[in-house]
Image (cartoon, rainbow, N blue to C red; front, top):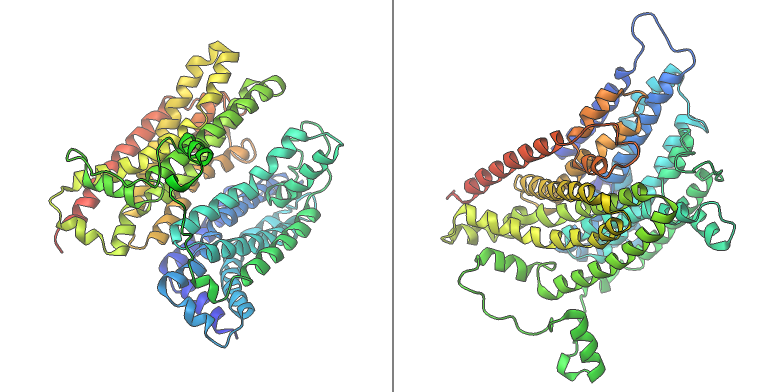
Length: 550
């Protein structure tokens, strides 16, 4: 056996959190089946109830694959690089392909074990008579296997190119979001066309595992607006395998000693550039990003200054680049809002803007806030903070404010889209105000939850992964219940699940179709506000405990 497989797989299976994850997944699937199991002596001979459970079961498995699996391969190679053991692997008798296959087999072995924990629940659905529309349970597990291979190879490719665990996790989840969701946007815009661009969009959406799972579960007509689409399961299997092979070849090509060399370009000083180059640079950055920073003011919190100057997204040149990117996104979203309002209606465009902002918050917040305390503890710099005369409140306040600034810029990215909507229809101003309040509550909740989860761990990668999983479970899990509204969940159950979800409240405030019948406001504001207060108190107590002498 490849020694890397044994080391990777056994190291994962020996961790307590991995055992807890396996047990929780099996328990959740079992409870889902028991929820709709026939009571008394009655049975559903048509299999309708079983199909309802199978669909919700399939969507839950897909969400687990998309949210949990990428975290393990994304940190596999970068951990070796940070610990200095990657050089030992490259100097061993193992070939690059052996190293890669060992890493890949370890991740896939753990993922397959997770899927095997759900087999009893799937067997119960099959015993009830539930089958999908095209292949049923076997086809579902086959597609999930392709998704596992695709996401694992993608995570390993990102891990070979990143130098920090939090950067690898952030980039991996961004690519997973783009691969799973953003690839569906061109097809939604160009559906029904016969030109080559529409055909390319049709193939592009086959890169995502969401359409084939919907097709197998009999929900392939969702979002088609009455237009027939060709089958996508076979196309996804083909493209997923080809894409996985491409990711594997690209990763193995980097597994050599050049991977350990971080060549830094010498760079060119601004004064040495041409007049046109200096003009473009100053217009784009507003200030020279390579100019030496001035001394910090005595009125500033030194921890806040340290966070801004030591973290990539806190330094001025990255902040200005984020501002420029926000301006570009604002112009693009304004164009989409204008054209979409003419074809789709205000509600659809508003829902798209809300989902885009929520996705940005869920994507960026854990990577920024989960490592506020865990990264300091892992790097050994928390001891220096404990030695300073700063109080725990000052440290916590500076840490949270350092995350609030880039998130504020992210929220500002789509504000011109709302301005366009209010210009088209002025009576939307109260609705937009409610949406902005909900987005502010969502951002605050995401920051406090990620920071609170991160304070419980010493390793930044573990803290970031846990924050991602918990935040996505709160923001995405209730949407799965909403997707199964009236089958099998009733209106009261769906409303109770959506009440804890700030994203659902934002969609309801935007009067998104499918959410207008659930009264979530202002009760959701009270729930999120109370949760934020509890998380803030917990953070203050936790930081106070950590700054105490050992």
